[in-house]
Length: 162
Image (cartoon, rainbow, N blue to C red; front, side, top):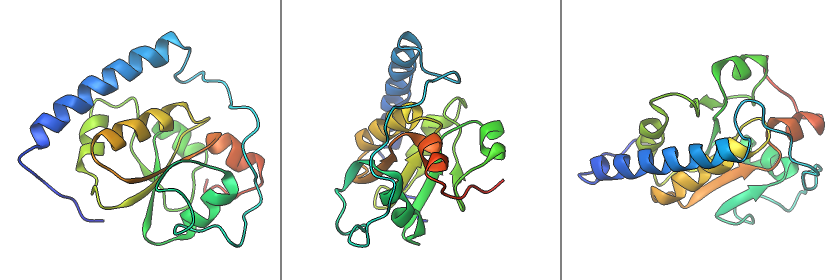
């Protein structure tokens, strides 16, 4: 994974921090956080042999079945935005941990290569949805969010590293 640094980075970091604070307040107001409720009815769990990175939209929600194919692609960076404790309880193989609640969260997102392709997930889809929005604001064009999070992934019998 390549990291880029630009002269816009301090301005972008300020924008990301502001967006993170606003999204955090919205999340708190809406009952998000560690006690988030699972998202009902994740989309198709069965991977389709015709779905791949080239066939999926450049960003947005993907079903667990689509996420299986994305996670298997060596060009896709899988990012877990849960806490270290949640990560230790089980995560997607090869996932990079960037704790949503860490003070350095916005900085860590700003360090990611804007030309990369990312699959984000959390417990139920709340935090990863917010992180996807932040990454889009940072100029990322290929960001996927696992619909229903690790709950949907595990619920479909997909493997977790423990």
